[in-house]
Image 1 (cartoon, rainbow, N blue to C red):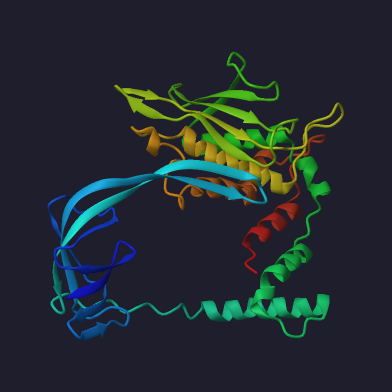
Image 2: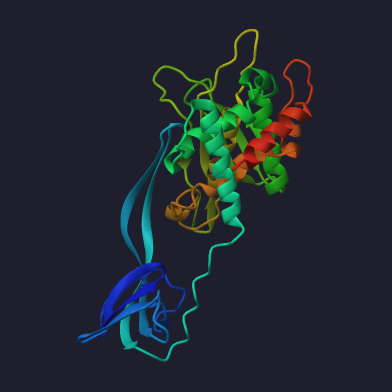
Length: 356
């Protein structure tokens, strides 16, 4: 007799007394655990298939031990931004032994939830909006689903066209960076103080001591924002030294943000496009992830986390670029000091909400 059962998001074909490695379970070693999401049962020539799960069926197992899998190198690259991260990762696993397979005796499997009925009309409306726009723009009579991505970008440009040359005077690099620092201070109680007694690899690099509310060192933060010969394109976060705890001492990290913004001239400071503003905040989110780490092992510190989570802090910080309260902190005209006009703020905010 065997069963196909879902355990911690994975499907396994199991038999009695079989040992299986699954994603980490919360059950303690030596304890028993049951799984009732049984998709198929086979007993001799009799096969029962669930829809999707078999009512009443269950698989019982004993947790033998918790462990980590072999180390793998995870490489992530964003084509358009030039962003690259390479992390080592060891998957947390649990070894279990199958003790029983029962065709009845478990609680009835919960029925699958139907798709939200309110979502369909909205999706249909957006699709029809795109179809009408494609016909107006290029005479497309038969609009297909695979046309959506192209025409959604075209429609965004038409509805929310923000001229970079109009916006750039409000995004002086130093102001944007200080705005990111201020937001971090408000959120996490940390301050950034530029220092000049730390060795650095190029004169363009700035170094900052990051302190908590008690003036304890949180991290050393490096910024390297301008292109030069031999420097690759794109934007990324690097950890020169990870955070870890050893013999009771919490070693603090050294983290850098690297970008390639237009450098200042003798007559004009470095001014950013709005896309570059979001890039700075995105990489700063990665930097905060590294700077605020507080773990024992460097292999689990900072951005050394599950691949699907590593982008969360950066996306959270990037979202502040669309908030009027945050823009008011740093979006000021480099010559007049005027705060960015409300009409521009509204367009930026609308751009963040569009889902076409």
